[in-house]
Image 1 (cartoon, rainbow, N blue to C red):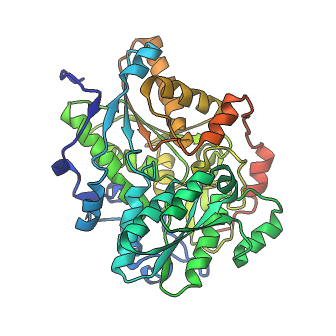
Image 2: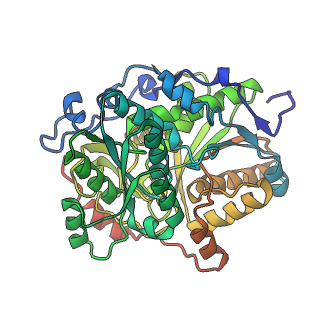
Image 3: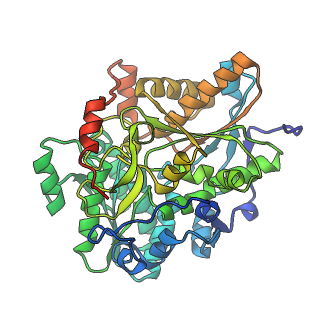
Amino acid sequence: MSTKEIPYKIYLEESEMPEAWYNVRADMVNKPAPLLDPATLQPITEDALAQVFCRELAKQELDDTTAYIPIPQPVRDFYRMYRPAPLVRAYCLEKELGTPAHIYYKFEGNNTSGSHKLNSAIAQAYYAKEQGLKGVTTETGAGQWGTALSMASAYLGLDCQVYMVKVSYEQKPFRREVMRTYGATVTPSPSMTTEVGRRINGEFPGTNGSLGCAISEAVEAAANQEGYRYVLGSVLNQVLLHQSIIGLETKAALDKYDITPDIIIGCAGGGSNLGGLISPFVGQKLRGEADMRIIAVEPASCPSLTRGKYVYDFCDTGKVCPLQKMYTLGSGFMPSSSHAGGLRYHGMSSVVSQLYHDGLIEATSVEQTGVFAAAVQFAKVEGILPAPESSHAIRVAIDEALKCKQTGEAKNIVFGLTGTGYFDMYAYQRFNDGQMGDYIPTDEEIAASLAKIPKV
């Protein structure tokens, strides 16, 4: 335990910002299973992947051996506008809970996108620009990723086309307008503008959409336009690589004050925030340098880790993307219209899935009314209105801190505050009006979806 006086906010100097991303796969004994080509069901090649992604990103996606990949200087220069991000000691929350635990959160909301998503958006847009492309296409759930990519694209002069999950498109009009302000075209998904969108609408009439649907449409849109590539905001290895800057900065800040974390908590949808936060700490566990509990928190309405199967499945509902071995509820699983739009994905990152399968991390699921109760409690004492996604981590951080209150243990708890909730007021309105409910899919619903998983 640190003997130094710990400030409310631990800041790193610009000179202390990481110069390279950390690739946790290099230290993993059991590597994530390879992506499979949907046409051949054989491991996908770099050339094939480069038809969908930028060439450099395809290389990063398949690189399981390089531990540190240099961050290009233009990307580091962009990062300096909002990084290094602070690690905050939640003294007020600790007092509110009456816990001996020390609670820290890594705050990623210090930019207009309001979330951590900008860390990968600028990297992916940079590689697209370097390749000489005209533009990029993507999907977005709650809108943070679409906002981040529209910002990065505007900065670099790229066209940006966003397919936004329909329920979020309708619930979050202001997030949509931020994207349009930065010059992006925003289409509710599933739409009638793509072949796969029309097919999904026919199969699921009146659907609210899902990230899997939006991914399919964005991939098709990129494939049908010369000079465009598809970029993804979560799930992929390359995204977790870029997001490792979160964990690297967190570890550097903790080390600065001789703080050893006992528990690290992150929300889990596709895995970008969680994977980025935990990567350096998982690396320590893999190398035998340290040990701590790492908890992935997912919504009870979309519980891929806690109730899914660890198998090969399509990453998208339209079944046009490569197959990935992951914990999945089935690519056809349609989550309820929960308010944590960024967590409404049927599967999980192959890295996070492998780590969970190997017992290096834990997973739990929580219901959204309990999540919003924690969000409101946090907002009242810490002065930040958290995003619904982040609030899943807050819920479990509070629960763990209350366990410390019972045992008298002064554990160090660290969680990721991935962003702000100021564009999520419809959700907060529903909670404040007592109109928010909890939906948990039945075993029968999940079984029906899993029954359609490809036999690989």
